Length: 442
Image (cartoon, rainbow, N blue to C red):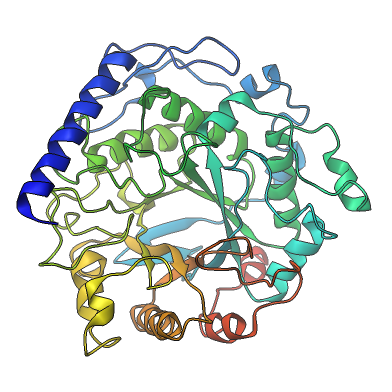
């Protein structure tokens, strides 16, 4: 992209953002409960969000939208949550080094409002058993803001499977409660991910944490309610604040587009409700005022180049986790995939995009998404390289995805939703997940 094209793209985006903010309104207002008329807002100061400035959002609001489950079962409160701490560039759990090796299971963020695959002869139980049997210790669960606000009745599951009859008439939050509980039974941890603002819209043209229909106050309200709902669930460990804010800048100092400042407001709102949760902050894309090194363009969510100069400042720094996304040629073509030194050249690319953050920051790093189609030879080379990089740096991550219906990357399961893909099983088994079971034995 030439300089003029970049400049024109930036101007066009600025016009759209200005129009969106005008339609949303700049004055602070109380975040809405489920089913209430929309009251769009932008909350908090530029440097940090102070929860007292926002009216309390109680998890019971979900009941008003029809959830029969309500809060997580009180019996879970007797199980002490694992104490996660991010310090010295590493993650610790109950004082011991911890590595997340997890998998993304998507679907809640789509119009089905339910994890995918349950339309087959599989149940939530059988798929979670498969995840655990493959050696993963965690799930990243994508969500959609409008699904959280509306809490729709779930669809797309096979009611002839006896275990799936539990979903009859249930709403999205009932199903999410069910997933959290069943995952806990298998000692699988849960990272909640605000993946989309609208279930029917991906990618969002703005690529920000708000759009014409939903403002920052809606995102704050949803995160505060989720934090209240699951703070007592020992296996819910964190909040991935927003998936791939590709239209944002990092460190611009402009409230409307600086993802670093927005992450501080959202993250501090979550910590104000549930201080134990880890706050995952992804990188941005390639906006004009947040450059990456030379011609090496970053994937959406990968660009943390500005985090050394403009670090995220949370009320508790020991809850911060930087979480880049990184992909190979099966997802998008990049010039560095054509370099004659590929894949050895990738180490320098990753160092510029996100790797240097592990040296300049005391915060840990966990890959929020990585993966690809192992049947494409060049992508398999890429994946072997990133897995080796993660092992060498002591960085964990979440594979994209469990789902075989991921069009570009495919899944860790075959099309039958049962059989592990052999090449992926062999490759990802090189990453050693910390045993959650051993941490529970205290």
